Image (cartoon, rainbow, N blue to C red; front, top):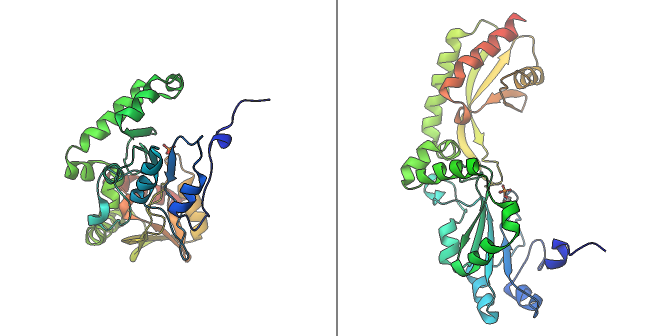
Length: 279
Ligand SMILES: *Cc1c(COP(=O)(O)O)cnc(C)c1O
């Protein structure tokens, strides 16, 4: 017989769409060590739904003196609702609501290296620091240095929003993007032969990376067409270059989103399109 699998230790409760405090209460036995709530990061359940808030879970836990852990998934440190990104609870808010432990990713909304971060009450963290598994799971020095560099930016919220690429891209306004799209098109046109057509059109960006699954952020897209090439051929040739250019096809148009195009990428995009026309 093999050892204990994590699935023997984990007891799922509630239904996919509806979970109530009573589901947690009914599942607690003398063996229960922790109440866990996991954030539905990259999907949304809509319609006939109910979920247990952190506050409710904390009050259930107090009845049995159990710790509460929230797996926040993306884990933002900044309240992004002021920037049109609604619905993501900050790590601080989970702790204020009484969670004993909060886990989140270093490389999603935080914008740092791939890492799992655990924050919370000292009484819960101390035993983890002494656990033999820590040696196997701990971060290496290079990752720690990158994480530290990212976290330092968060000492000033505006600095974090400007210098962390994912946050900067997510919080660009529709007006800034319209201006950016036009500026990029102007710059590209100067270097492009006849046979490449560019136009701008209104559209949406999605955040991806496991967060805000339903959110559509308004943007201005750049549509590119090359004489003699279908959008599929154009998409494939640009994607399979040594330095790939990743666009998307929507309703037949090949599209780039200026939200994720850096100024220094524009000359390479021009070269790529020139070589397609030449070929
Ligand atoms: C992304 C995610 C994880 C895994 O985190 P990584 O550090 O990116 O591996 C765990 N739980 C939830 C809810 C997540 O969204």
